Image 1 (tube, one colour):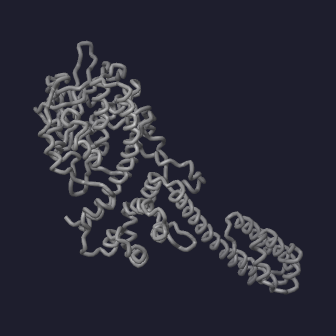
Image 2 (cartoon, rainbow, N blue to C red):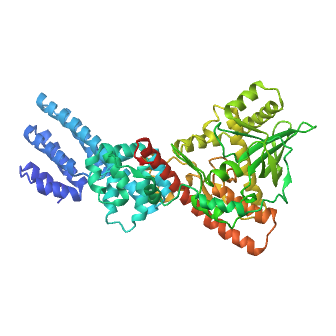
Image 3 (spheres, rainbow, N blue to C red):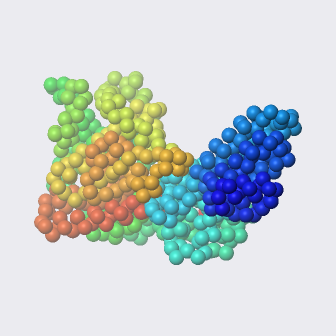
Length: 591
């Protein structure tokens, strides 16, 4: 059907709506041109009746437009028509009113259609990320960054979580979808949406035993969830088994091969109630005005053999879990809070980093040395007490803290990139015990943070220089994973990388979030087992000098496997903690 054919049908009053509407689906531009031509003829003849009929055609055609590009063609035609109608000589006020109302309706409809179209784009974009990239890190960051993600719906008026629940029944990869759903459930606003829309969600999940915690949450019943169920759901363990700790008493403690640094004035700075003290700091001024900086980290290989049940258990647990109502120590209380902890006036094993600072507190990275040592911390300080001593105390400890505070402040000012990164990470993964949350309140918290960063950076640089197997902490970019920005800028799904969040890798890579060429997690071996594994590598290859090809191949294979393992485990622990804390605050956990 050509333009002339459509025009003839209309002008001859042969109101074949079905023919024109059906044809419009195939060739919208031609149909609009035909109707527009008919309208111009009707206007020239001042045929008000026909003008109104033709406007009805426009309304009918508008309802079938699905493609947003076709909508642009349609809108441009409408503008020309309205403009032409105003120029008609004998048009009445009623005709003008009809035109104005028609224009208002069209504008309102266009806004609605635009909104629906954008919603559908976002929904389809989310589907591609979930079902094509299958990158949990990307999904996690998008879900956490978007508070209104459940407002995004498809043509069936389903939000993405409803869609996932519906798809779960017939899915061939239930384990993966289960992980994705857990990411959504870890978001507080989404859990609130579940409770507020019981009738919508409950029929989709109440028949699945694996979702019974969500069912309890929605119903808010007295049926409380056993913590063991959550452990099974996320496939992880919380507590260090006490029977494993008994293995400790079969070990011989031997200080041979360790440098004696018990005369150094080490001090620890942490939360006032902290018992697990895995880092200590000391600084000395030299005669020429330069300084020696010492950072000591609790040394796990000194008290726990590598091939032991305790070490294997710690790898399985991954890290200390800080929950809203409890702390589950990585090694159990005896090891984490006593035997390995750098408690005051207790002789302890430590790995010590040593740096030269010039008189302006600038670091000489070439001077860096890493040694095994025995130390004895002289002071256990809280953030409050440390800041008081920095400002008011003129004793040796006050001067030491003042020097450390000056050093840390200069380090912080020299690297503003990491401050933005830390702020974003704390928003996504809040942990009230992390010193980066306190750096704006306490000078001493900044000391702890900058010393930990320096140690992690320097150790990574050293192992890379020596070409030794290592587990690095990397971050490819600090991307903005806001779903609106991704869709509006038409970002290709395949170009996204979940590694905008920091991750472990055996390949030397930069940490762009911190602004470091190389970085590692090495300062919390009593809280993170990956830090301890790096100490075992150093103990074998660096200190015991077992650098045979056989040992190198062993550790190379080990770090490749452990990198991916710790990435997966870290995600599980994060999702578990968020889920547990939400349920516990609502008294839905069986204690």
